[in-house]
Image 1 (cartoon, rainbow, N blue to C red):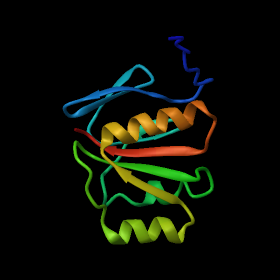
Image 2 (spheres, one colour):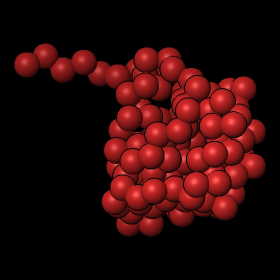
Image 3 (tube, rainbow, N blue to C red):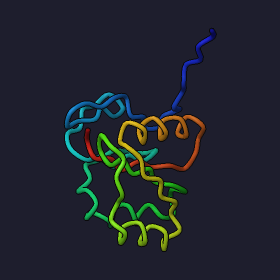
Length: 117
């Protein structure tokens, strides 16, 4: 089998995660995170909608990682993002990180907001 190394061309990949933390572009970040092509920062969780809505012109979809297991996000959060024409995909945080990295490597306009496992 031939392996192909993924290139992120200066973007911000998620390198790993563990109990209570994520490793983003080589740096450990504790707690919930919001990662875009350009940057990574802490995120206040489902109630912290403003930074997600601020991405409306920058991204086509936000992957929302709900922790170790898949869970529903609050209906008002989903509705606010859909009203702003931002696609929302909810999945476990490990799946959200992997999906974000794959689409990031393809040059897609994506972000991930994830709760730690």
